[in-house]
Image (cartoon, rainbow, N blue to C red; front, side, top):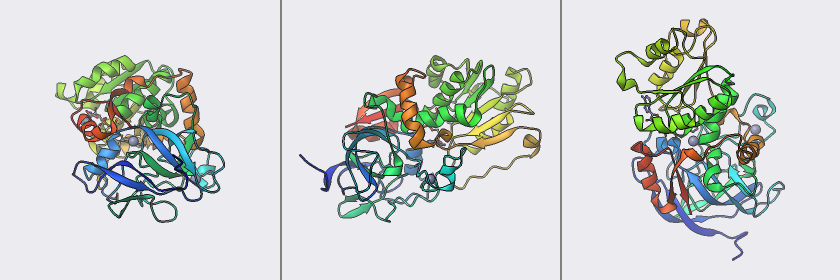
Length: 377
Ligand code: CND
Ligand code: ZN
Ligand code: ZN
C-alpha cells in the first residue's frame, strides 16, 4: 500500500509518565514536512539513557513521549526539499544532528550541532509541533529520534544513509551505544599504543569504550563493575583484568594505583553516570598526563567538587556526547568500518526481542542481565 503523504497508524511504545511501564499503543504518524524524513524502524536498542528518563533521572524531558534513540531502518518517504535521501534508503537516525552550517558544525573539533535537543529537551520538531498523535494527544519526540515506534519522523539533518548490506539488528548500536563508547576512546581520549586504560562500568557504552581502547593499542585495560557477571564478556572483548569495588576495602583509585606500581592509568572512562565514580575515575589517572573521560549521564541536579590539585598537576577531565563523532559524516563511515571488520560489535547484543516485549528489555537492563537488547518489529 502506498503510504507516502498519508498518516500512518502503527504500533509504538508510549511513555505516559515517569516510573510507569511503557504502553504499547496505536499511534498516528503524520507525513514528513519540508526537510523531514519518515523512517520505518527495523531494529532499535535500549540504552540506559532511555531508562534515565523513565526513572525520572533526566527530569527535563516532557511526557508523554516516545523514547528510543539507537536504531536502524529504511526511509519510507521524504518531505519537500530533501535531496540526499530517498524511499528505500537504509538509515540510522542521529540523536546528535549535524546541520553542517552552525558554528559547532563548522568547528573541526565540535560535534554538538546547535540544533541538538540534549539540554533543552523541547521534544518537538523545528516547527514547534510533533508528528505523533495517540488517543487525540500530541506525543513528544526524544532527542530528535524517537525510535520505539514502527515509524518515526526526523529532521533530515538527523539521519545518515548507510550501506544497504549492513545488518540492522547489529549496526543499530552505531546509533548510540557503540559509537558513544568507541568514540570516547578513539576520538576524545585518543588512546595510544602501549597505554593503560580503566573502564568504569561494563554496560553497552563501557564495553564499546573497551573495544576502542583495544583498537587504539592499549596494552592494559582494566574493567571495573559491581556486577561480576559482566567480566566474562569484558575479557572476551579485550579487558586484561576485571575488578569489583566490593572485593576491596580500599577505594578503587587506591586499588588502581597499587595495580600500576603507584603510577595510575593513562586513560579512565566513566561509563556509569554517578558523580562518585566520575571522581574515582579522575583520581585514578596518572599525574602529569592522565585523562579522565566522562561518558555517563548523571542525575540532572548532581554536582562534582574536587581539589584543583588533581588537575593542576596535569590530569585532564573531559567528556563527550556520541563519542565526539560528527554524526552525519561519521556514521556511514563507522558502518563501513564494521562491514570491513575493523571492529566487531556483535558481542554487545545479548538479547533480541520482539518489539512488544520492550518492558522485558528494560527489566533485563535494570537487573544487569543484558548488555544490549535489540527490539525488532
Ligand atoms: P548500563 O546500565 O548497561 O551499564 C552501566 C554499568 O555500570 C552496569 O554494568 C552496572 O553494573 C555498572 N555500575 C553501576 N554502578 C556502578 C558502580 N558504582 N561501580 C561500578 N560499576 C557500576 O548502561 P549503558 O552502558 O547503556 O550507559 C552507561 C551510561 O552512559 C549511562 O549513564 C547512559 O545514560 C550514558 C550515555 C551517555 C551517552 C553520551 O553520549 N555521553 C549516550 N548514551 C548513554
Ligand atoms: Zn544512548
Ligand atoms: Zn549544526
